[in-house]
Image: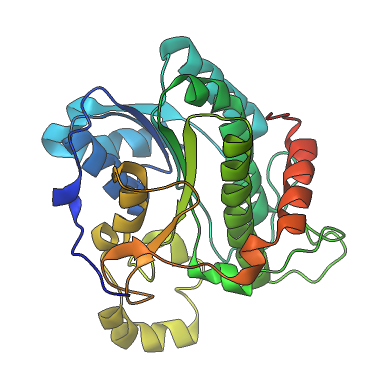
Amino acid sequence: MKATKWTTQNIPDLSGKTMIVTGGNSGLGFESVKAFASKGAHVILASRSIEKGEEAKKQMGSASVNVQVMPLDLQDFASIENFASAFKKEYQQLDVLLNNAGIMTTPYFKTKDGLEAQNGTNHFGHFKLTALLLSTLMKTPKSRVVTVSSSAHKMGKMDFDNFFFEKGGYTSLKSYGRSKLSNLLFTYELQRLFEKHNIDCTALSAHPGVSQTNLGRYIDGKFLYKVLWPVFKHFTMTQDQGALPQIRACVDPQAKGGEFYGPHKGMTGFPVVVKSNTASHNLVDAKKLWAFSEEITNEKCF
C-alpha cells in the first residue's frame, strides 16, 4: 500500500484531551504517552509498577508535566477495578483509551484470577478495563478505544472448549496468537455495538510490525535468537517508529471506527490502514468471545 509519511508531526493539538495508556512505562506505550503529552493531552500512564512509571515520566522531559502515573495490574481484576474507580472519581471525560500493555511468548503461568496469563492479560484484562470505563467513554464525544494487536493474530485460533489450555496443548506462540486474534475480534465487535446503540465512540486496532521493544524478552535467551538477531534487527523499526500505528489510530481526525493500522510494508514502514485476516472478522467467534469475556470478567457492557 502506498504510504503517506505520517509521523508525530501530524499529531493535532491535543489540549483538553484526557487519555489513558496501559503499559505506558516502556516500549510502545512509553512512546505513545510521550507523543500525546507533548501535544498537550493529559495522559494517565497506567503501569503495574508505580516506580517504573515515575521513572518513565522523568524521562519524558517537558512533556512530563502532562503525565500522571496510576497503578494498574492487568493480571489482577481487583487492581483493574481499583484503577477504574479511582479514575472515574477524578475525571468526567475520557477521550482515548489505548489498550497497549501486553506480554508475549511467556512460559505458562496464571493471572491472580486463575486465567492463562497471555490471554488473561492481553485480552481479558483489557476487556474488563474497557467495560468499567465505558460509561465515561460514552459521555465523551468522539471518544476512542484503541487496542494493540499484532501480525501474530494470523497464527491465532479460537478454541472455546480449551481457551485457557486447561486441557493441555499450550505453547507460548499458540497462546500469544490467540490473544492477539482476540484483540481484533473484540475491537470489531465493540465497533459494531457502538454503531448498534448509536454511541458516539469508535473502536480501532493497530499493530507495530516488528519493533525493538522489550516485549520479546522471553525469547532473547534462545540460541537461534542470539545468532540471528544481530542481522534481523536491521530489518526492524525502533520503538518510536513502531508506536506510530497506534498513535495514528488514537489521534488522526480522519481515522474511522473498525480500522486497523500497521506499517505500510507489513513489518516496517509508515502507519496506514491495513487488513487483518479472515478469522478476525468471524462474526460467530466475535459474539462467542464477547459473551465469554463478559462471563469471565463479570462485566455486562451493553
